[in-house]
Length: 168
Image (cartoon, rainbow, N blue to C red; front, side, top):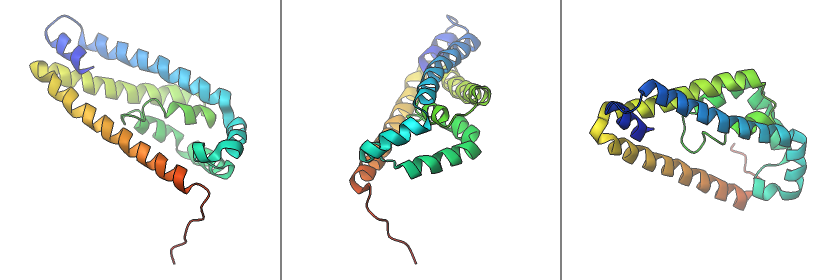
């Protein structure tokens, strides 16, 4: 998106067109992953977690708690998730698993995606010749989020099923 914004600054593309195209493309991908989540559903996911809970790092009870949480805060989770590199795609799956209605999912996904693609394209547009600086800032941030997520996942795999200590 920053590169597309840079190209728009040179007059070769429309900034609004770029943001709309990026948003539509992202919505198409989000709908696919939402559909995967709907297909999986909570019961199939719980059955899978009974057999492979360590690798999923979720027990059936945790899936129930997550579904309850998502029912209350799913719109906010989807909106914020669309603004976080590394989470942007993944947030669609739990939305589908939790059975978030399609309308609110599309609305919050579209809004978050529009904000994100607009921010990136505008940054490339405003910075013009310095669009690489924007990409240079976003890539390490995305990598840091990914490394953090992998670290949390590794910790959960290693400690799965171990009793947690209560703090007095």
